[in-house]
Image (cartoon, rainbow, N blue to C red; front, side, top):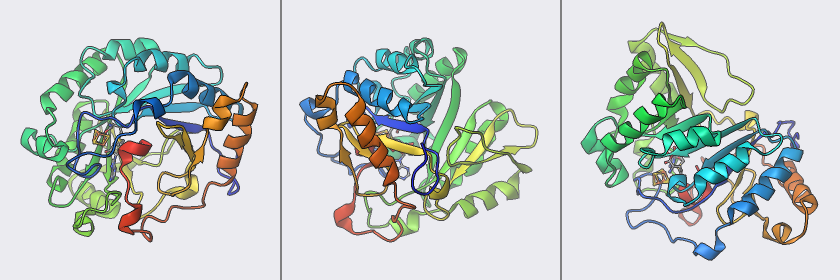
Length: 323
Ligand code: SAM
Ligand code: SF4
């Protein structure tokens, strides 16, 4: 279905939990976030009804995210059900990768085709500091397993000045060794850290660093591909993507809506608006839900205002909405 700006919405992101086994500096305050009560988190069967309704409006791709989706019990069975839903072409997962070990095979069998794994440093100590305690070696064991079972892999790195921007080149070099997509994401001041301005490294700066070092060739984007501008280092098996939500927002080609773990539909990650789907979940069938989702799509704002609205009172954690 098209929204009021003529954008085709074919991509649904489901945040299946607000819980997480990490506390990344840029995503959550050190003492975490107020967790919603278990009883307020949608049941998988409710998410499935939302997926079903969304497919009637043209959604073809679903991403499972969180919080950390792999901490939610039963998530692999849920992925299988989503993958088997009529109309769905692609199911993917965004994860910090810590719980991938021992689960990659089941994920592949369930129908997940690709994984986005968030890793912001290739240096053990730096990774531990950024994630406030994560074990990088464990993530790489999970990645090896995922690779062995044939899951396609994207690595997401949020670039922060003075934190991990010295690792842009080593990250990009991974695409020369592996058939992975290495994606650099501009840091967004969602939790309004006091020093957020100094932390932003623009996509232009990232690109300049890469071009100074490599022969970088631009690629074309696919139908269900996201906002990343894709490149390949000449001769590399893998690719590179640069995502610039701040300096060059990609709202004009945004194709997605989101559902929070408590059942609110959001047509824009960075907009305050959210529509409660629980009354529709209480109604029989999917007709009411279809109508509500149509309204959500129609009211999708033309662009986000994060660069304008930096009021601390509107700070939020991506873990609540699903990044
Ligand atoms: N826990 C999973 C993970 O980390 O991949 C899934 C949820 S996480 C909220 C989804 C994505 O949001 C991650 O790739 C994370 O790096 C990104 N993210 C969170 N806060 C961000 C911020 N302030 N700026 C840019 N990306 C952010
Ligand atoms: Fe957890 Fe992902 Fe947020 Fe890190 S980015 S704290 S792993 S939800």
